[in-house]
Every structure is written in structure tokens, then in C-alpha cells.
Image 1 (cartoon, rainbow, N blue to C red):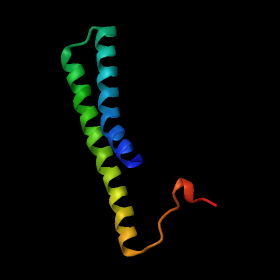
Image 2: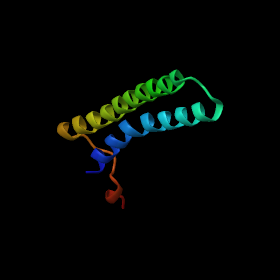
Image 3: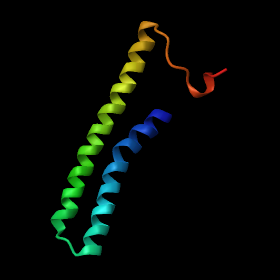
Image 4: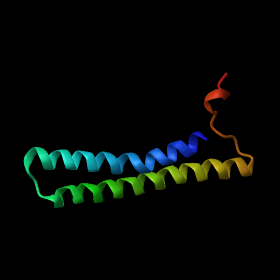
Length: 79
């Protein structure tokens, strides 16, 4: 369940943050609406990169579990 939440936040947060910052800067400095669109595109690209990184990490852990390799300890597994 934690990974689903992390995956969702990794996808949504950069996009929302870039759009909010772009809209704020547009209103504060009277910039063109294209500036907010540019920020949205940068946020989308950042979200894609973050999701890919998160997916690779999940895939690596899943492959290690399937092969019987030692995994890194989870939060509750620490001694």
C-alpha cells in the first residue's frame, strides 16, 4: 500500500508544484500564459522521470525477491 501512495505522489507532486509556481509567477510578474504552460511541461517531464525512477526501484526489489536474493530491510524489519 505504501508503494502505491509513493508512486502516486511521485507522479502528481512535481506537476502540481510546477503549475502552482508557474501560475504564481505569472500573476506576480504579469508574464504570458505560455510561461505557465512551459512550467506545466517541465512538471510533466519531471513527473515522468520520477515515475520511471520509482518504477525501476520497484522492479529491482521485485526481481531480487523472486531470485531469492537478500533484500534491503524494510522499516519494520530492523533489529
